[in-house]
Image (cartoon, rainbow, N blue to C red; front, top):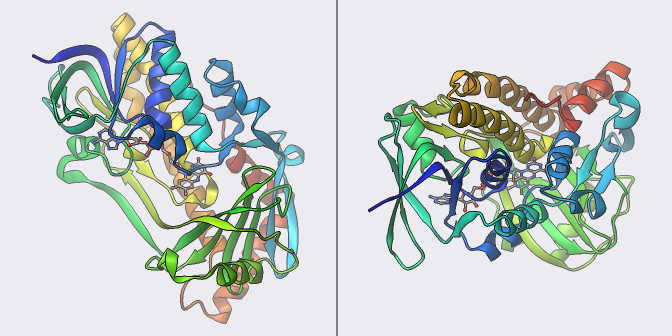
Length: 390
Ligand SMILES: Cc1cc2nc3c(=O)[nH]c(=O)nc-3n(C[C@H](O)[C@H](O)[C@H](O)COP(=O)(O)OP(=O)(O)OC[C@H]3O[C@@H](n4cnc5c(N)ncnc54)[C@H](O)[C@@H]3O)c2cc1C
């Protein structure tokens, strides 16, 4: 015999947890399941940059106080090319900011908030399929931590299970989505060292791209452009520091022991459909962006805000209009974020086989951004986040 809830949420990432939090605030019950353990969820290193609107949502809805007390406000970034740094001053350009607050800290806050509210949040439960997708009683079929079969019937099933989950295929079927791959990836390292800069440095150099980012007073996160097939273990620590250092000419990096390294492939994806019947996609299940514009988690939050309002109207007042309009409304922002992420990626990375013309054109593009009030404002507005629709 299956269980029943109003909203079955597959995935306890930022999208799934925030959605259940917002639904709870308006009296809509949900069950959230995730294939991973709580510890895995709370320790996986991923995003770090939160748009101002994301911070306001987390703080103002009671999901996180720490985002303001532990997170660090950043009023700008540096674009570095031709051996010189150029600051994009967000505050001066658009009067907004971003916060450096790691995704796993957001997840710790959301998990704690959900559990203290008595949320039905289940770890180690893997969705295998969504059935009766075209009916108004879709069901999630899942396997629990001891191998037990779980069946959850709901008014609405939400796929918040990321880019490798099962709900995307249930919604898109054979339609799939719009897809683009890139001929490079990021080699990411976590190291024990003091910060090398107060703000993020996005550096374009003839050797390739590097991002100098921060985590805390003692731990730093840095990336450099690499081949998608690169083997993370094939480099000595010395080689990694030499590569990073060569890509930020004019800056001296604080070095220290590297304790984590990984290769992150780049993909752009937007599902052809975000909704089928009463099953709907949010966050990375619906779209993926390359990480250069720091948009992934922020876009998930924007989807969730729209969907939470739509589900409140549908399930509390029987008003279907917001639910019907969800996909179209969400896609407006999704494609803007796709463009921004693609643009930042192509402007800053060096494509394999790039000619002298390509290199000089790229520097011309960077100059047209940093030397123009309007160019700086375009970047600042997108990076700090367009207004959130509710
Ligand atoms: C290295 C890196 C750096 C990034 N930097 C940034 C950044 O600075 N800013 C930014 O905004 N974004 C960034 N991103 C992107 C961001 O991390 C994602 O966009 C974000 O995690 C999406 O949230 P989500 O909840 O949609 O999906 P996810 O975080 O992927 O969560 C999906 C959840 O679903 C669960 N799941 C999957 N399949 C199943 C199943 N079958 N059954 C049950 N559960 C399942 C997973 O275990 C997972 O917990 C970065 C990503 C990476 C990898």
